[in-house]
Length: 170
Image (tube, rainbow, N blue to C red; front, side, top):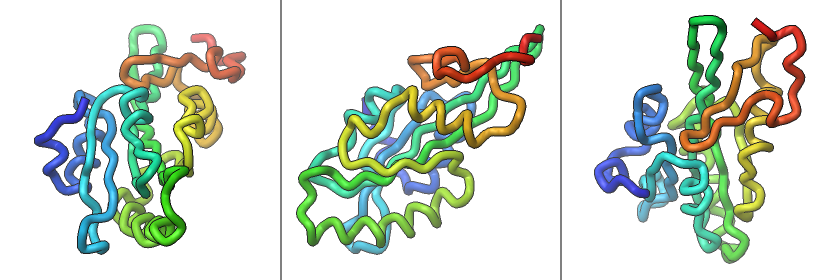
């Protein structure tokens, strides 16, 4: 579900919003503005399925989803935000419009900076698999993995994604 107030915000502000652990907005999608020199936010929401569904097969778009790595040990809970950046060139984008991907990617990367934990490239919605994304996040993390990855409406444990939890039993 798109939050119209967030859609009207600059991309950098929406990115800051999704990075807050208490925010109900967990993702945004943007595309090149009419001036071809800026990005405009086109959709925001909370669930992974909404995020994936919001990419348009006829558009060049970029998006970011804030996954929470939640570590529950004894009576302590630690949450680390793991933003996932997506570069999308829809399967029915005409060849001339595909050239926008390079220009927009630079603007997107300048906006979200080095904060993105995982970067994905996609041309169809099947490229954006939640479990595969969680595996990529786990693979780029440190030695101490979280108990689970929270995608807002779905939680995936390390066992769910086929990662060893041996030696991690607190």
